[in-house]
Amino acid sequence: MSLQTKNQVCLTGTPLNNSLSDYMSFFKFISCNQPLRAQPWDGILQKDLEIGNLKPFHMVTCHLMLRQLETVVLPSLHLICEEEVCRPLTSTIRLYYDRIFMENLSECLYTDEAEEGKKKSERRKLLVSIQKLRHLFNNPILAETTSSRKEVYYSNFSEVQSISSQCENEPNYLIEKITTIQCLESWKILELMKLFKKEVMEVPEAKCVIYSQWTQFLDLEVYLILHLT
Image 1 (cartoon, rainbow, N blue to C red):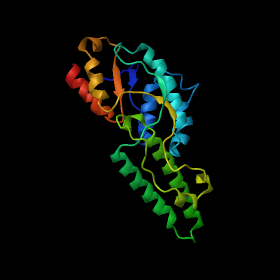
Image 2 (cartoon, rainbow, N blue to C red):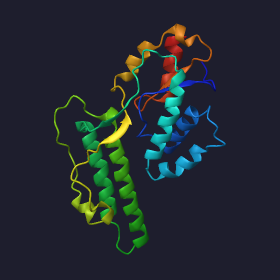
Image 3 (tube, rainbow, N blue to C red):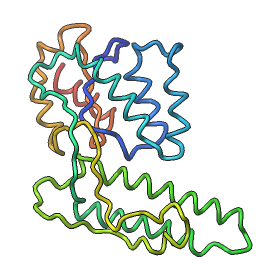
Image 4 (cartoon, rainbow, N blue to C red):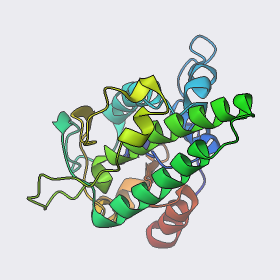
């Protein structure tokens, strides 16, 4: 099975933890039927992605995906809805967050005072890392939906406040209400694969690719080739 220019795409997760090249490859793929000359979204969004600002990417991606999904040949899929979510981290992601956060914090705190330019650069790197991790925190796919706990694990922001005035108003918790596309949990790939029947894939222009942060794009393509041909 080869990828065609008229592929239908079903976005079941937000690839928050991928590299910039992953973002751009994915974006170019889903927007292959869009008038990119009139709307050079990939060039516009690249600057935001380079500094860790994912919101413009999410907005444009959702817009394109909603347009693409109108013709997806998967009638059994759940409807996509926007919902405010407020969920805690899993214990694994809490530890990951704290480790990365403290590494960046130490890197910023112990920069030589004489190297003002480098220190300023490290400070910016720290704040960008915080922003990226907060987006990671808000990802519903990584959330612990079955937990009844309302508390969250957080790092002490007092040290950050002494570095930059940008963090002066930061709360002592990181849960935020955000508008996001609600989707299935980590087992969603297996469930969605059950919806794929061979007869659906026989239609020449009814190719559908599932892209998720839990599964690499090429792995999914191989899965489709092995199980649906």
